[in-house]
Image (cartoon, rainbow, N blue to C red; front, side, top):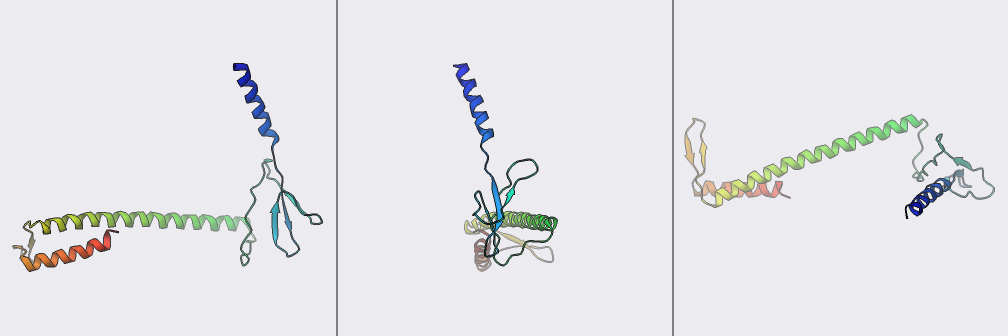
Length: 153
C-alpha cells in the first residue's frame, strides 16, 4: 500500500509540471488589445511569459475611455495611492462606527435610568446640585431618544 501511494504521488507531481497554457496578446482590426490562448489567424500575436517562465496573468480589457499610462511605474504608484486611500477610509469608518456604538450604549443606559425613575441631578454654574423635575425629565427623554435614533443604526 505504501508503494502504491508513493507511485501515485510521483505521477501527480510529474503531471502537474507538464500542464502549462500559453497566453497571447494581439491587436484586433478595431484597434482593441485582446488576450487569449489561441490568437486568430493573420494577426501578430505576442506570447506572454514572465522572466521566471510562469505564465503572466491575463489582464481584463480596459474601459473604452481609459488610456493606459505611458509609464508602468506611474500606474503602480497610482494603484498604491488608491490602496492607501481606501485603507484610510476603511479605518476612519471603523473608528466612526466604534464611536457611534459607544454613544449608543451610553444613550440607552441613560434612557433606562430616566424611564425607571432614578433621581437625576445636574450641577449649576455656581456648583449647586439640582434634581430634574418631570418636565425636565421628559425633555431629557426626548433628547436621549433622538440621540439613540442618530447613533444606533
